[in-house]
Image (cartoon, rainbow, N blue to C red; front, side, top):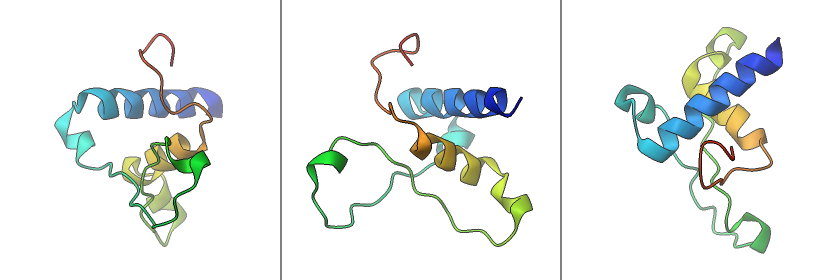
Length: 84
């Protein structure tokens, strides 16, 4: 059951990142800033910034859950939705 929810959030995050719609969700997602360390393994990744929260209830919000799930994926860049 948890896998379905994570898939739906990951799919919604993919659609939001590729098309920037819906706009109210695209404003909640921000790309992770470059830390100054240039590693070959992290050069092509598209990680998202995970905001810090204090409670477990706040961790369920889309702005926190979506980046957490997105960053845990092994394949972050796919050319189309069917490949994703």
